[in-house]
Structures are given as structure tokens and as C-alpha cells.
Image (cartoon, rainbow, N blue to C red; front, side, top):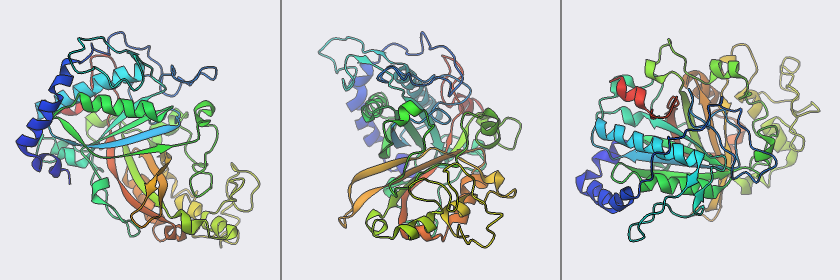
Length: 427
């Protein structure tokens, strides 16, 4: 798949894109990394409850990228890219530009004034001053980036490969994979769109969007900073048993690739990212009896509590229910997380959103879940969980149609560095 981005485009296409974007490069603002924001541990810079959120900012620099353990704002945009760069030097150039733009966009600042005879330096979507609006930008690489083009094959993260097709999947090739994946999270969809347009404007001839999709959560999650569990489009609370992203010990154990292990040294501080576009067949689901819905999920729909328990956060009593009298052995929550000593290594950090984007060709609502998760080991994490879920009764109501496996790059520790610098330097 990945090779299509470079091999299929050819010099003429790349040249055309470059010519179209050349004027935009003339309007490149000054380095955004100058006057860098103060360092702060990820997850400790929280939205100000007294503000409207537009000035809320997350730190860009750090050992890990933002957007993984930082609180989830209300909007997300995933954009997968095919890289058009023709050699490693051009790839490094792409990553430097991308880092510079993302550092500026997450901090904000005035749009420079230029000669009006030149193309405008900014889309203007956010006005003459770009506010950070709680924006985080998380850049990941796909397995295809490690093919023959850039001499990176020996440096591929050990578990990173192309997303396979599970039995219930109906994958659309036009919505899968990519050399790069950019996850943008912000308080508003406009900020994410502005960031994507800015990035595209500054990458002429270097990368092109392969596929994109936007998602949403209720706006109040911005103020609750993840304290509340939101509902998915099935109407059930989603992520109740998720890992606590504020617990650094848990994140070190389950989310971050650590130095000194079996992964390439450059990957320390990164994380495996899974993105799955899961369409929900809501018309069928909405005609299903409530008792059957709850049995399929394993939770009460109203409270979110496990069946037979009174509170959402109460753990299900699997030891006292070995035959599945209260929570069926095939229930979604029981298969996803059996809560046994043997399956504890399979824990993942979920970061999902809902999506809705019109109708399918058959006239059904095209909506569902943008499932995303992070883990230190793709095999022990998502792949183990998804293998247990294969064949569950919920599959009658959901259909995964897109996404991919990626590796979130380690963070940029200080101004002057750039995303992927360790990878390129390791060649």
C-alpha cells in the first residue's frame, strides 16, 4: 500500500504539487520554536475552567509526544499521509518542517503580515491570531515508511506491520494504512482543520493526504479532563475500565517503549498506535431489545455498571460468576478484559472518539467509533484483545472499515530538535 504513494505518483505529479505550493513556502513564518513554552510534564497542563478554552495549551516539547496521555478535548482529526519525498534527506526535511509547524500551532501566535501580492501566510480560519485551543499534534509512522525508499528497514519497530484483516472486518483500502499518521486533538473542529490546512500548505511535494476522518466527544469533556466516561453511539458508556493516564508507573509499564529492551534504541519514548474506523450499524442496534443489548455488552445501559453491580466503577465479579450467569462469557467487556492475572499484560490505553459523516451508498447512517489505543507492545496489547473479541455477538452490529497500525514517535525534548530525528540519525 505504502509504495503507491511514491512509486505510483512519479516525478511529474510531485513536481506539479511542488509548483502549486511553492508560493506558500515564501510565506513561511519565523521559527515557532523560538521563545518555547515552559517545560511541563505531559498531562499536568489542564484547561482553565474559567476560560473559553481558546488559550488553553499543552506543552509541545518533552520526552513523549502530547496527545497520548494528555486529557482528550472534544474534537479529533486523523490524517494519514503518503510520503512523496524521494530520499532520506527529503524525508528529514519534511519532518523538520512538520515539527516547526506543529510547535507553532500548539503554542499559537500572530499571523505574520506580508506583501498582499503574495499568497496569504495563513488560511485565516482562526483570525489574525492563532490561539492554541488545547491543540495536541501526535505524529506516528507506518510500516510502509520502512520499505526500500529511505533505507530505514533495519530500524522498523519490531511489532510494526500492516494492519491485517480480522474475520468481521470489511476494510476499504482507500481508508487504510499510510506512511505517516497525524492525530490532531483540540477543543474545536475548526482548530484541527486549521492545523491540517497549515501543514499541507507547508509540505508541497513532500507528502499528500491518503485518507482522513474527524471525530467528536461531548464538549463538557474539555472541562472534566477525562473524569467523566462518555457514551459511544451504541448509547453505552465507553472506556470505564481504561488505564489511568495520570499514573506514570502504569504508562511506563503498558504504554511507552522503554530503553534497553528489544526495540530499536531510537524508539524509546514512543508507543504503538492503533487506529480503527468501526462503523456501527445503528439502525439494527436501535431495534434490538434493551435486555439483549445489555447482555451483549455486559453492562447496564443507563448507569454503565457491570450487570449485577450498582456502580459504573464497580469491578465485575467474574470469580463469583464462573459460568456467566450474570455476565455472559461472550459479553464484550468480559472478552475485552477478563481481569485475570494471565491477561493483565494485554492492557492498553484507549483514546477513542465518535464519528458521523452522512450516509452510506445503501442509505444507512455512516457513524460509529474511531477506536484508537496506545501500547508498548502491539502483540501483547491490541492484537491479543482483538483476537479474544473475534466472534463476539457484538460483531452483528459493528463493521471495522478502515485504520492502520502506526508507531508514535518519541517526543522532541527541546527547541531545535525535530520529530523522527533519532530515527534518521540511527541509519
